[in-house]
Image 1 (cartoon, rainbow, N blue to C red):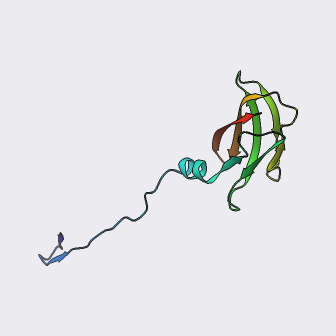
Image 2: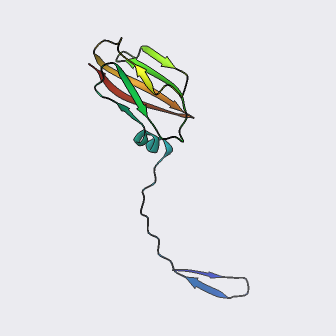
Image 3: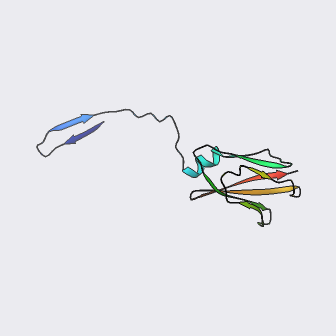
Length: 108
């Protein structure tokens, strides 16, 4: 219950109940959960699945040593050819606005 008093001495009280049904997170957390990279493990390609409201600025694939292997500037490139990569673990960096997400995938 909240009570307030104005300059003339008048008081008013009110009470309310707040129910939170959704846990809000940071934009990065929401984006991280909304964007998926599949198939994983991959053979010939990986696909980035993301909401239509998201615009991907740039993607880059790195090997385990941090060397950039493949990169692209277009948000239209949601399918990336990985057939030339050796088998192993890779990281894909996805830049969206001021947020950088990193997902990992295995190339078979």
